[in-house]
Image (cartoon, rainbow, N blue to C red; front, side, top):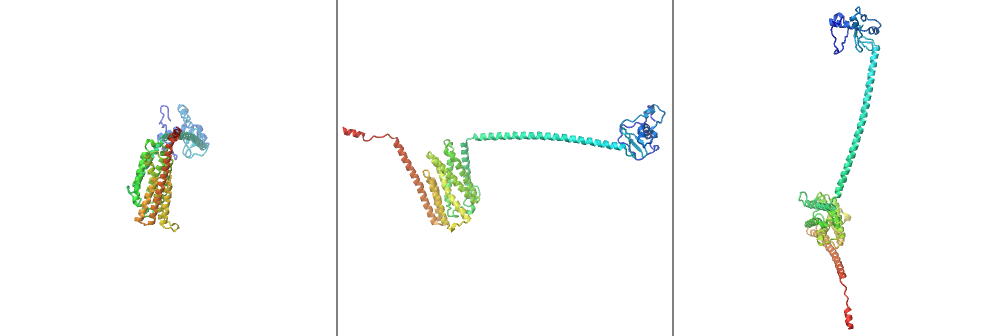
Length: 464
């Protein structure tokens, strides 16, 4: 027994783990301290807990061991709520639940204690599930709110980006529209002229690769077809390129920057230069079909340029020499080159139209060239530059057919005849236009003269 002066051994406040007793041990076999603790526990067990759940049998340890006093009252004091005490039972030590009054331990029968613990566990599970649902709902609301805020921010950002892009594009458009279009045209013509000259250098093999003569399996060589001119004929390109350079410099003059003639002519000439470069590259690559399409586009572009020159005549002889003459030479040579390109294409395809010989088809080709050039030379004052360039090519076709291979004297004779007819057509047009101009000029001079009254003085003298 413990007294106020001798409380006995002190129990730990919180054991590391509850003691588990698997079998009943006799009190005599326990240590003195353990036996004293068990005696104190038995004397402190409440009577209700001792008599309520132990199968209706009162436990002798629930009665007081002493005659009543301060020690007995202290020992009989009930255990605090929520604490568990161990009591010996039939199957060993049992743990008492102070809240339910039931005993749990080895050998404890199923009863209200087990049901209470199950109900308590179910209640805790329900509370945990309710907390989880509440947490999930709060998380969902937070996610929806966050996604709404994010979507709103994205929409605001995209709208701001769109406004910035529209403002930037409008600013760029205003800046581009503020540029001088005439200056842009002059720059484009200059760049295209440089590209065309570099392409011509590549066409003769200056930068490596085959020349035009050796490209496409030699179909552009002088001996490949009947309409292929001699190699000397291609020297006209030097004159044409020099004229194009002169035109490029002339269109930079301040007096030519904003004229209607240069505004309509500049873009067409720039396009023709690019097409010339494309023809050189396609011919070097051996693409006969592509080269034929490109050279026909080049021919029509130069026809458009000649039409512009006819609608806007030159104002000075210098302008005629630096603008009209180079473009006329350009067109006349491209016309003949287109015929040679057609001959190379048909030869490569092995065409045998109507069973006619190559000479017959070559004569028809020269006739087409003659008629086209004659129509062009019959415009304006007579385009002598077109007639000269076309006659140059026809001349070297005649020379090649007489001195080279394949030999065709009849074709050479017809080419010379075409030269004569073409020069006569262009020359007669020029003479007729010049004669009409001189007649008009004389009429204008006569109209400005003072009238002369003839015979009035002689009539008065006769009366005297």
